[in-house]
Image 1: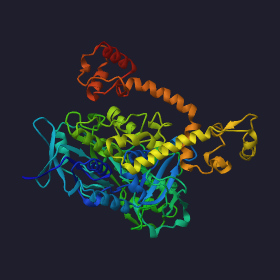
Image 2 (image 1 turned 90 degrees about the vertical axis):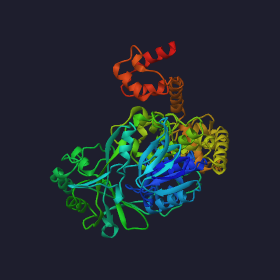
Image 3 (image 1 turned 120 degrees about the vertical axis):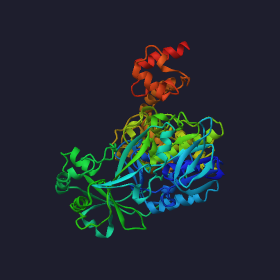
Image 4 (image 1 turned 135 degrees about the vertical axis):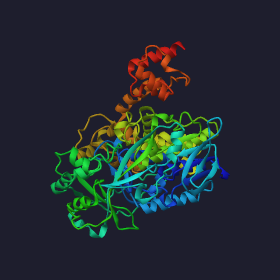
Length: 619
């Protein structure tokens, strides 16, 4: 047995969670060992070559506001940038960046390599080591090396006991041909951590030179939109198009005729897959009334001719896949470079974690990313950042960072996983956030930068930009209170079809009208000509939603009363008379921090909360 160096923290896995966790710790002056199965898989995009999307774009902006890395690296690797849901309200506007996946990996690998507090090691972690007090004290690798530390963050992604499945073919390996981790699961079981089995999948990659793009509709990015990172004032990128095409009845017939060969339908795959990212087999079988489904052909990188077939995830045999893909307009002569596959993997029961993402019964052991049952790069990175921050706080014996549901999507994500648990790969959606009007991606810096500053991740350059924005918002609000006589705005109202009142109006009053936008106010009134359009748009959103926001803020205040009622962690709920049996079991398992968290536990009713409130009042 070789006893190697001692580190403040060890991070296991260098995917999207692992890089954020290790960078957070390192930037907070901790010595970090980052262990990965392959240095070639650092921040590797094993599935879709994009960052962001509905609700996921919110997560990236929040990561950035706290001082994380994903938004910066995403901006530096863009092929195309779009703002989704522009036809809807600002609360659900979401950035989606088509990324050069090779460049993203290289950019992130360089950031890791150039961080002086991080030591990179290629290897497989086989065991988590504990001391006599049941606290984390190190790891052991498959090559029988021991590394000491005071905290471990496990970010193993989908690599634990992973199996690739394509029809009748099954192989013990991780995504995209990388090696799997076959040793760590047994160590986690020995530590009393419950393991479950999940599944995800990915579509084929096809040769760009064998696609007839003339039969498809090009999809370009947007101009004049903000980027992922608040550090970037403008976005400039090559606008490489994606292409839209559709499945058809022939595609669906091929799938139906071969559905008995699908591992999802013949019993070969028994693990649970993602509800909101179904395979093409599931789409055809579950939505039989649909005569076609959207398919997007997306570039993977400027370094390759591989194209990603978004919307056609599958585990059908390769002969069926080839017929299926070639039935689609524009893909009649396509060559498949990498076949679609499903991947099964081990993950943990996330209800075993507390809100810091530490395992409840093992001090110093944190978990982040898909090992917690989530799906997606952005969900993983968000957890990695919080786990890294809280591992640092644990080392320094400081108060942890726990973000609430009313101030961040990250708070919703972690609370959902820890409090409610998940029986399938968890995906963030705007509908999961009950206070999403407050949680717009444009204001993520307003909501979270101060937290990042207090922790120490937000440096002067970011903080000064944030303070400048706050000052501009305050100034703009004063300017928008300026009253104008009808003579000043009559011609403008006529041009946009608004009724003209007899009394004076302020710019703020005008913005409450449906047809008035911040951009056309800036264009039509010299008093506003010099205002920053992005900040003005953010101020305008707050004004337009003012009535709804006031109602939502009242609800938040009521919720905070429950959140502020702390629950001692030594309560034995089985001894509280009046609680139902299920509530006792769930409360003892989750050990909620406060009444708010207790009220969100599945199986705990409002009546149970009333009983608990009475019990706490008596104490």
